[in-house]
Amino acid sequence: MRFRLGLIFAALSGIWLAIFFFYPLKLPEAPFAYELKSGYTLKAVARSLVRHKVLWEPWTFIFVRRLTGSQSKIKAGSYEWDTPMTGWQLLSGMTRGDVVQNEIRLGEGMTFAQFRNLLDQNPDLKHVTLGQSDAWVLERLSISQSSPEGLFFPDTYYFNHEDSDLRIMKRAELSMERHLGPLWSQRFAHLPYESAYQLLIMASLVEKETASSEERPLVAGVFINRLRRGMRLQTDPTVIYGLGAQYDGHLHKRDLLADTPWNTYTRGGLPPTPIAMPGEAALDAAAHPASTEALYFVSKGDGTHQFSSTLEEHQRAIDRYVFGRTTR
Image: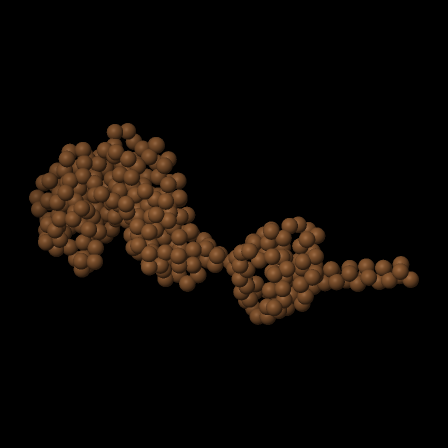
């Protein structure tokens, strides 16, 4: 009798496990979003899935998980299922951590204020930094620089609902360090930089001056030539950055004369901080500027520039491309 009962129990268990492994579950809705918070025990996960009407009962989920491995392997995060799946497929996906990843794009040339606003507006992040000062952010990130500008690498960063804005910042800061370090050690010899930070500053100027990848080394070469000769850089983006909220969308003569720490018309050398977040091409250009005799450049109005090695050539280029005059 006991033997027969054992066979019946084994058969029923086999059928029940077969259902778990091979019978698709019916989702409450499609797609179905499920948030698994960190710190949940195996039982809590199983019972939560039952409450959400994903599983019929919790015990098979728990039994199979314990049979196949540690409960700690279930990954927290945001899940989204749009087609029916078996209990085993569900468990396997949560073990692998097949979470839905959101993304945020930090664009080349963004300022730190724009970066913060981008994070603040994202509803899928935990807003740890919201309302905090830049100095507070720097302290939490253990950054020694007095300004956060330019310290974060522009890229696409993926995250789930467990992530915070501060975590995205840290990842972007570490990414900039990984890019800047090798470029600093492999930079051309005899460049007028005293530190990797100054290379970063130069890269930010290049980033804001041109969107043309072909021109970036030339722009960097012009700035290097001017620094070596003791000439002021006279680059408009630094003036705009220094004006901050006072910039009305147009540069006026009074703006070029208004002295700020970033006004490269009134002050020599590099500005004290970067003015934006430079991308890889601008960083490379700052580390490996083009060998050129040019000291000047002016926009042609089509996204490219005319480069000149003398003031006379530069003035003719201004007449042509700014005022539309042709001179001999």
